[in-house]
Image 1 (cartoon, rainbow, N blue to C red):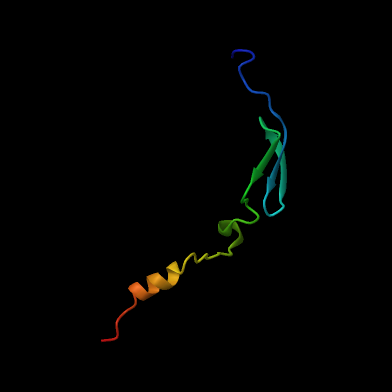
Image 2: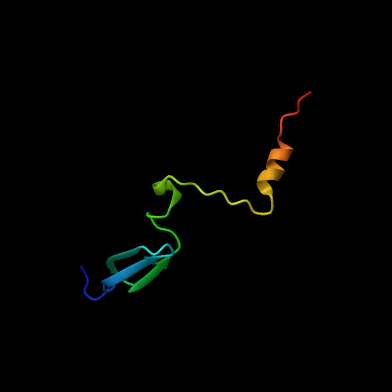
Amino acid sequence: MKDKIHPEYKDATITCACGEVVHTRSTKQNIRVEICSKCHPFFTGKQKFVDSAGRVEKFLKKYKKSSS
């Protein structure tokens, strides 16, 4: 293997928007993320629905079964 071609790995801190902090090693020292395994809906089982501009109501209105 060639010398001096690989990046230097340093101790790193990964910080999530929810407040979770993970210590690891990386080429960057500080990393900020928006979502992690502590707050991601897949891992927590809590799903959040965000209705922007009434899209859910618009969908339900459009595809509602007619009672004829």
